[in-house]
Length: 587
Image (cartoon, rainbow, N blue to C red; front, side, top):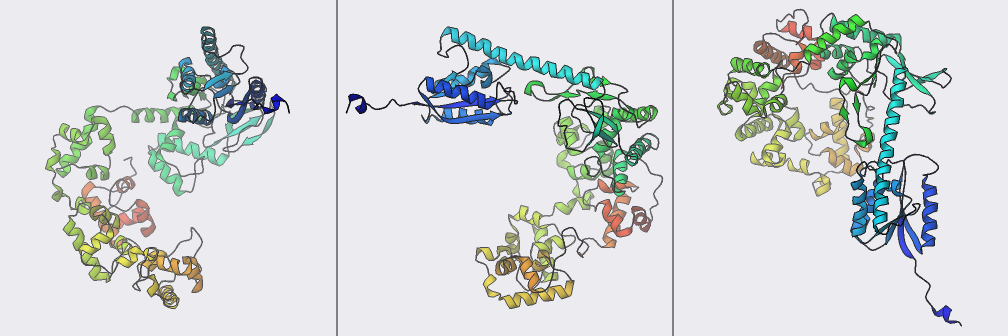
């Protein structure tokens, strides 16, 4: 046996490799990078034990490169598992716009005792002055390449816009995206979320179905000619079952975006906002927009569009401080006090968050209108007291519910009119259980506890549970967990789930098949018709008139759709209290 056989084989240095490719470019593909890195490792006695790969990731940002972030975290952990990092070249490490950022991440590795090797570069990263100078130049060149490429892409997109093509934006309501091949022939339409498959293809915006075009023209006419507000227009469209381009209900903002879109008169505008080189996205000044007038077939006349823009400009004018405070002054003169609930429920008054944004706090706004926040007179407004019950009053209401119902649980509390919700009791007393204990009611605890925590589920046999279910089904014609919890038999819905595996299995045992999702179950109305009319009478006395907007902005009052469902229309409900609405006006 020779002496060489007794010598230990040379141990290879454990290293990791980092590779990155922002596109499928052959030169910088991750496979090509790995080939060069492996060759370098073999030549220098190294063994690659792990690969960190960012595929399809730009080198401009550290935050959007998960593999690089993970590698730096492993480096800072200083486990000693590897001794060096292999990278194809300086540009694969990153194309940071600040060359010092690239140097910072390399310095973190060096401080942890881990070297960075650039396998395809012509210099050695040995810390010499020459390598430091070459690396600085390479880092600057990598960042400059991204800046030049960004400028070329911007000029190319601007040229396509001026030729009448769209650059990534979705088509507005009433229009469609048309796919055009490199030969100018139309290939078809792109649905929402679809993209072109060939780089040579182009997309342009064209008028959509005639029905949608008529809706767009109706929106402009209602807004410009008949002075209907954005909210009113959205309400009418939703009531007619017309959805927006996203397949969702119309909103105030959605109508406003339609009214401000110049594509309806044939203008193509791009670069309203930008976020070049992974910077924070910002709004650009109108002088920086890329415009191409007359490149889209118009579907709205210019005169009608300009009339709508005049109204839009008047509504976006920045109000003065006095104009912002005037609604508060009117509210103070009318009620004699101010608070956040009164502001929130009053129509025509900006929200509390708006006053906080304008003046720093509500107290500051109160001072400017001459109202001392500590001198509120809640007794002037009994409705405002609904959410401000004392502890004693809350407990007294619970006792009354207990006397009337004979038992208590969260469903009974939530379904009893003129009683605060179970959430109010939990926030005031810590839990509903604690509120029940304070009025001396203990038997409800088994319903709140449930079988999973050692409750009383064992005292109910399956025959008794099924008999109770059959009784509820005969009495109500349907079954739900809330109905079971509100029953007098003492077993909650959780008990049925525990004993039968699920509520559905218990339902099948009594021959009940729950309706499919979305079907209507018979429900006990939360408000009687007289309750609803009393609310209307109160609002009528408070505001002197009634409208959809008054109902929508009034806190503690049922929403307008509730009145429409119960009375057929708001006009019918108004007539029952003796109010006859005048011509529709903007509120």
